[in-house]
Length: 296
Length: 251
Image (tube, rainbow over all chains, first blue to last red; front, side):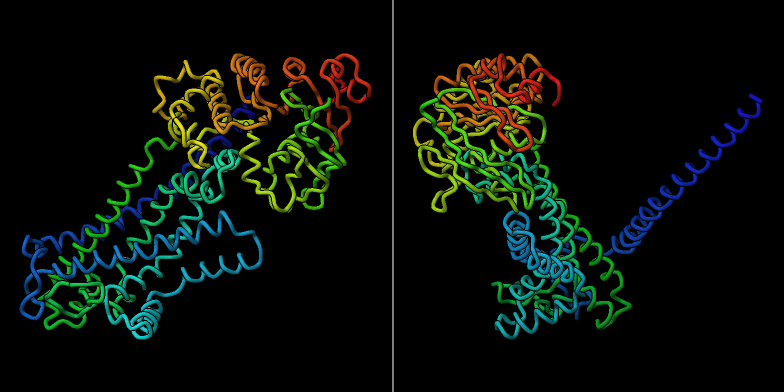
């Protein structure tokens, strides 16, 4: 009898181990596929693009109808547009999130606004581009310019930033707010001095996603900021600029000699990836600087 | 019980539809320690948070009746709750220092409320001395307060409240998260502080109430059952319910 029980027990244990192994195997495989896909894409870009990279490539403007030369104006343009998008999107997004989490009373209007923000996140980027064209470029008379492009990109990344900021603000312990308010410090000062500084690392973490998106989008800047070709650098925010994603699009679809410029296209893609990672890295450094001393 | 610094007159309090306090009338005596005791959910913490309008932060709450502080109703429409909280400090159940340096934890309130126009260093030192923490932290004022022990953090929170020079200090189970030695230190501190401050303390610990308070109020399901001198409550209570609770027959 005892032997029967033992073998039964062993069998059921084996089955359980098998199930566990199966489950972990599936999960590991999923993770592996993602890493491989990412690695594959990066590898492909680097292998094809590295040949085009040189000092002249990143410091000189294009020549010979964009079949030779560098992409410096596009690099600078993308950096300007991204900084502009951050300048528009971050303050507006953080302010909205502060209103939604700290001040607004839960109700129908707030629910409506939150649904609206989520919808905004799902709007295709080309729609933002057309909105930017109609509103900033034509109606506000900003023209096709860094300003119009930054505003359009800023609105594009707004939902990401609001979402990230809301989460970060909510994760600041309620006890911090209570401690500050109980001292007779006003609500605004509590938000500004206690809640916001403690939420800032989280806000930046989430916003990095939006920032990367702003640097990489083509459609929103196509009608609002990007120039097909301009060798001169922008003198003010009312000037058009070249931008990396649009430059890639132009070279790959409408260039004077698409096949001949393949190496330049891959080189530009590689630079774009590097610029996005560089901006992310910068945000990560700021974040870790802010995180010192922040433990609870 | 003559000079009441704070008086409650027929106070009812509601969380939404649910009544948490029923018809409370009482007064708190100046420079005394008043303990609020009673089983969990009896409304004692709710009452404490009414006294500096912290319940304002919870939506859907409603107050009826009057709470007079220096003969003014603190729930009158022309009263700014921020002003009330400057005069009536609070220490919470769990130590909740800000993730700042020890110095900045103390200077935060006075600086932002315009109190600290004088000598901030002196104010920080004085507050920490009052909270009997100075000797332990005087060399690490620029270190994060999060590195202190739980008991030290709680004394820091007391010092932080004292830096605002409040008239009343509310304490919501200030020792329930602390070990016995830290608890003893805080009790000694309360003994010392009552010379200058009026202290109202919520506690679950009956011995603590008996040790440190001058007056004791016993609450049960939102009602004030008995309120008297602590000696009287703990030796010869008038009401049977109080006696049952104090002797541990329920609660």
